[in-house]
Length: 82
Image (tube, rainbow, N blue to C red):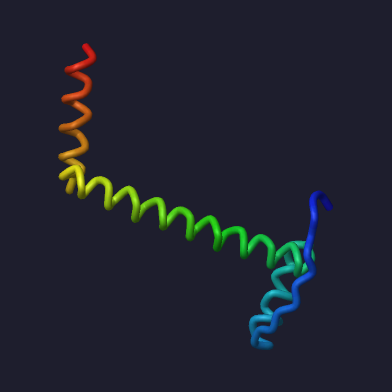
């Protein structure tokens, strides 16, 4: 294993634990690997949603409310640079 690791103890409903056991067995990996992957995906999803919110807020502040607005702006920029 690369890098530093911390040991974490967590509790979960037995049903979820059993499902995790089965998934790990099916995929030929440890529960730890499975939980690390699940947490990585959760973190990535949160980052992506945050980026989407920030981008949507910025677009609204610029008066961009539709795909047509984006196409119009791109067209205007292309005209300026040609």
